[in-house]
Length: 464
Image (cartoon, rainbow, N blue to C red; front, side, top):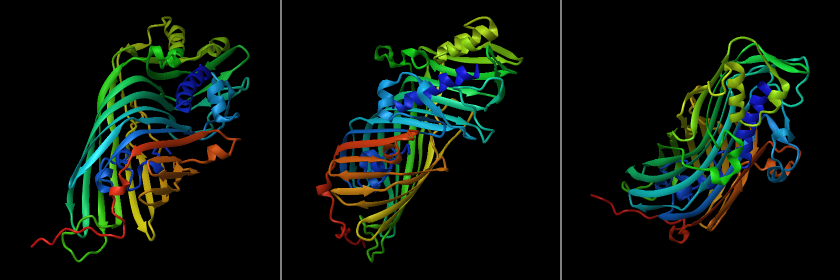
């Protein structure tokens, strides 16, 4: 059974995210990011330089992992392969992988002196796989050696497809010649389309011989909607609204202004800008075409290899496992509903202007985990991003540690209304290793002509 489990789970999670640096740094972090930036910190528009903007469309795709790679070029694999069999496997001590797709539809904000309001519409897909801690090497699932004791760690994996309709509100709590404090929040109505979650609750050993695979016990919980848990996933006629929920993002910026002799000056350049946000706090409850399941076998379990090899999706795995363990293909079902939490994270930033319109920003992203809860675990990230920032042109060079271990370098350019970039260029230049992909593009109406030249100062009159 272990082989069938991983093939089904990895196909769902990684297959979905591939045909789907998670933060899209070059799209969201400069002072002209506006309505794109409020999806990383809700206070970004009011702390930025634009009086308003309209995002026409923004698209980003990211997948990164340390467990599988594709021998063929990624686009060739996505367009020609319908199986995970063509994937080669690493043997890491800890399994992790994350993927997501963002489609930001028409969104906008407008600033009214000390207040700003906005709205956004997004369609999102995210998936992940993560083992709980460092263990002995994770066993591969293809070409499993005969009569060898192999190991399966405790791990979680999940994928989620959902949409968001959100409103944004921001205000300047205080602004003077010394500092400014900006606060903001996004309130979101969530529409859940499809989801799957799998938890291997206990690590176990297993042995495969020429006929059977044997394991001393098996304990797994999983939840899924019918389409995502089966081969019906790629049929668009099967998609329906299966759940709904609510979410919130909250954030703020503390800005230290350059020194001024005017006590009540505003719109000054800054010497430091510190940001903090809690993103994607929310949950979707799935009520239609949904189920929650549990397979538990506390005694040695022997399963024919032919049975395991025939498992191609979670739905088939569930029915097969339930029939083998409980002698009833429906006995594993515990409930007809389940809930899935969004990829919540704490995001911290520090931004420092340099001479001649250059800046450097440090970013820390830490997921907010509860490992035994249905959730999408965001990737942890440390990033240092130098950039050039002008009204018409901007360039960024993100340098990041993905999952605190793997170095990534990217590049992005903003030219008038268009932003194009990647937080991981290695995918595009190293054809021997397609373990990751990262790309984003955005088009919006940005009134850069209304932004004053950086050398000018707009100050309020002195108040007596």
